[in-house]
Amino acid sequence: MVLQSNSIDAWSHLIRGEGQNFKNADEFRKVLKNYAIATMRSFVYKKNDQQKIFVVCNVSGCAWKIYASKYKADGTFGIRKFCLQHVCEEANLRSRGHPKADSVWVAIIVKDKLRGKPSYRPSAIVRDINREYGVELKYHTSWMGKEITMHQLYGIEKECFDKLRWYCDTLKQTNPGSWADCEFTFFSDRHSGLVKTIPNIFAGSHHAYCLRHLVDDFRTRVDRSSSLLFEVLDGDKSCAVDLGNWSCSCRIWKINGIPCNHVCAAIESKGLSIYDFCDSCYKVENYRRAYAAVVNPIPTFDFNADLPHSNGDIIRPLDVRSQPGRRRTQRFPSQVKKRVTKCARCHKPGHNRRKCKEAI
Image (cartoon, rainbow, N blue to C red; front, side, top):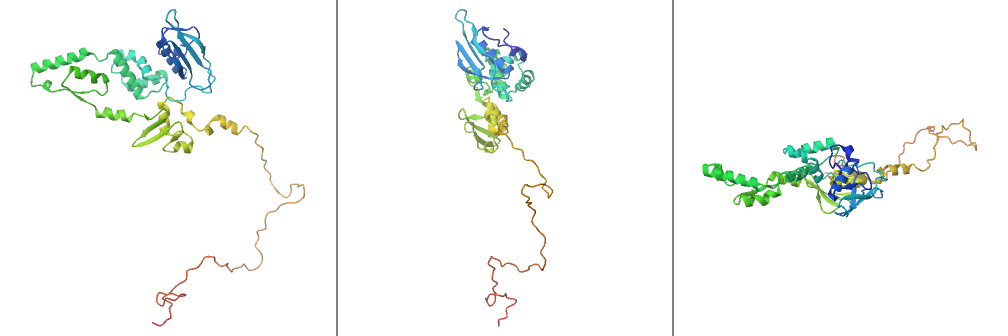
């Protein structure tokens, strides 16, 4: 069986049915992951070890399932029972990425390219995988995939550091006043193997962390307090997202019933579908249910004197013509108490200072 192929069509036929054998459980997991990515479906493990693997569709109630176990006779791994027909309403994954396209999967995909081109950048990996497989990756996922592959291909070899130490010692002997007399400072926050190896090879060297890398690490983390509670950073603001209670501290989700950008970030970090967290009023089945009942027709009539009436009575409009005679000019007294004018000179009410007639 060809485990890896650059064709999505080939991946969609990797799972054929009962009796299909694999080398071991690890090979079956890789094939199952490629099959899920090619068919734009996802699955969850009900049983997952080196002896038995049982997977079902990630949509609750769907009949899709595969059960495989190890044969005691030859040690191979084969499919025992299966049902490859989906009965769920989801035609495919509607999220931009795929939950099974993790860093381990990326490492397998780019291994051959990195063997011949170690300078293959994570941004180029994101672009190429999206073009070839139709899967959108996060930059951190592609970066981690490259790190895994580089460690598998090259590792942290002690011989490389021995050569570097020999080169530095040679420079010290031939040119004592050169930069080789200075102690080295290693920035090893991007590779955990350097943290353990450098102090053994260069005992007197300094160890430092790159500030830019540390800032980028904090900037790219959607922090998870629990499986459903998140803290999402939006610029200089922090929002609390609770997927269990369908709430976000920005309150847009509660008002509109549609996930805000903070909730979308939390949902995509778990590999879930954003559409499953929209209010039920936006779903097609509820729209159809609203108009499933009988809607009584409301006809339009032009009421006029020529239309026949059962009792002969016709309701005519009110007579709004002006009555004969002089119109009434007397106004109703105001119910609001008027302010009484008070003289500023004699302090008596009823007039002001200009009209005061009291003796000075």
